[in-house]
Amino acid sequence: MKVAILDDEKIYLDLIRQEVGRVFPNIECIRQYADSEGLLYDLAEGIRYDIYFLDVELPGVDGMTAAREIRKQDTDANIIFITAFAKYAAESYDVRAYQYILKSQISEKLPKVLRHIAEELQVSAVEYYVAETSTRYDRIALRDILYIYKEKKYAIFATQQGDFRQRLTVSKIWEQLEHKHFVWVDRGVIVNIKKVQRVMKNELVLENGIVIKISRSNLQRVRAEIADFWREQL
Image 1 (cartoon, rainbow, N blue to C red):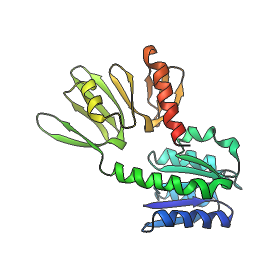
Image 2: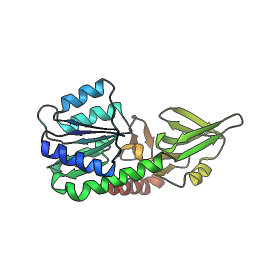
Image 3: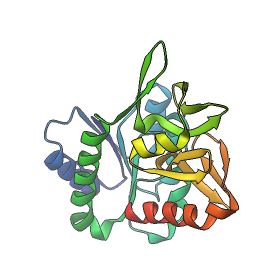
């Protein structure tokens, strides 16, 4: 696992690095950046990290702008804001931040967040759905599924690697998924909550820009389930 820490104050660079090292003693790489320009340069060079710790108010390019660039290049990385200001918390939803931590609460919150990430990484490493056809089997990582929808007699899995189809009802797939981070949006559509970037009226906007309509009968429930999931990440 690789971690990037962006902060213009050395005390916080070192504090975050220390906490990360405690939870992940065998970590592959921890890279510290004092400004966004260095991080964005490495990103442009193809360097990626599994977790990004970002301060918001920085000289030059601010941390929120850096987060938007990171999210354009990497849809799966965990972005964690660690800042002295609470006023940017709502904006952090736009980049699907994993967590927003005030610097005054680092000692209290950061270890818990890191342990939660460690648990999720263990689970995501083994959670798959096996799509079976008459000629092949496709093993699909749950974390890669964007949404699932009905097309005639098939269920189509829209993923980051492309589409997979299975001759099975969406209702049956819903049962097999055990509802892990998924929400039933309409009679024939299931969405991965982790891929939702924004909720707008009766629509969900996914991280890849796809817009999913929410049926009127499911609107209140879907909005509530997504809001509950996001609150759990705070």
